[in-house]
Length: 238
Image (cartoon, rainbow, N blue to C red; front, side, top):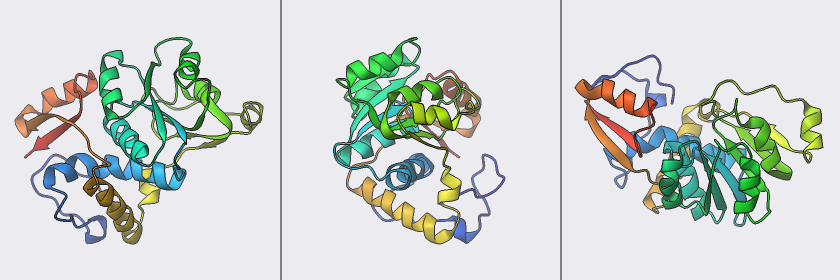
């Protein structure tokens, strides 16, 4: 993790403590598309909150790379996942990943849509990867004593939250974790990677590869990602 400053290349010098050995059942393509995103899902599901059977989760950007992994893995752990997306045309991708319902956060009253999709239940955990435009409404979707996790900022820096607001919303917990701190030493990195590899081997974790591109196609690959035209991971092959 955090192998240092780099760029697109077919070779790199990386300190040994930043590397993990791939088991036979995890190929190069799976490692390239799953390792970083999968380690993000790993700490969210196993450390930030140890997901239990019966937990209701709200997962933002559910059709995206981390969102698909989160949803599939959480579902395998026995949780129920409702997805949120700002790209309604990707609704089917979220459902295919295991969401029991999908809401559109472009709708002004989407917290009510979430409660309708959940049958009136609020979420044990809200995984918010959008933040600036959504974090305050995420608080409305969390059950009393529930957890709101701000782990991404797709719409910009999250707003400041007054602790009094957390009390008023139901004695909620709010955290902003990072994949880097959870994998800051070689022992932790390799233990968490082993957990991820086990989930891959069991079929609990996977991601769809929408495009395979070479380095001379990289500009178009970036445009597709920025315009949200990709339906899954973009794999770059040097």
